[in-house]
Amino acid sequence: SVAALVVAKIGTAFVGGANGGGSAAGSGGFNPDDACVGEAVEGELVPVDLYFMVDVTGSMKCPVPDSRTSPCEVDPGEPYSATTRWVVESAALKNFMSSPANAGLGVGIGFFPNSNALCEPASYTRPAVEIAQLPGAAAELNAAIDAQRPAGNTPTVASLTGALDHARSWSDDHPGHNTAVVYATDGYPRSCGSENTIADAADGLGIGYDEQQR
Image 1 (cartoon, rainbow, N blue to C red):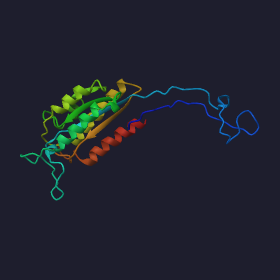
Image 2: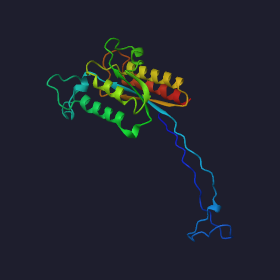
Image 3: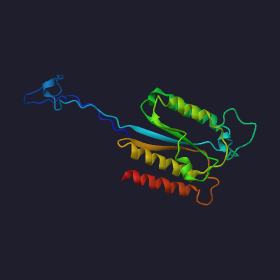
Image 4: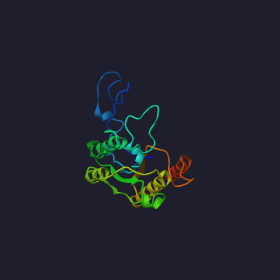
């Protein structure tokens, strides 16, 4: 999970008393000498790093909106919609990377499938763009998104495992940071044999969660 710790400043607080020492409750007065807390503590943000693992398989060429009667699960073939899933998602990703509201976040990105090593988790540990802080990293991240051409099947378990491995390594090298994987996919696992299933992916996530809790 991702957690950002924000410690708010602690200001003074009015304490009234019927026996003197401060304004009586309900009088509307305020005496700063009657503060129960008189110390201000500066908050400190814990750095948050996100590693995006993004689906660019053939089904990302499916149209948006999808057909209610015959949902699109694989590359539908030409002619493609002007608003494919990838058109919509890539725009959303680029807006996220460029948003001033996300300045200070660490963000990196990888994509799947890797056609040269489709089912190998190690091929998904190498990011297209390594984690770096926004907004400085936005241009390289957005260029990597623009370079994608969706095609191929969905190695869910391999890509998720590789993403978790990279996030784990990054977290070990950056103590004090909270690191999380953002896994964005549109389809069911395809290819890579009988161990590329939703249940197998859930098991991998469970292991990652258990490690994070320790």
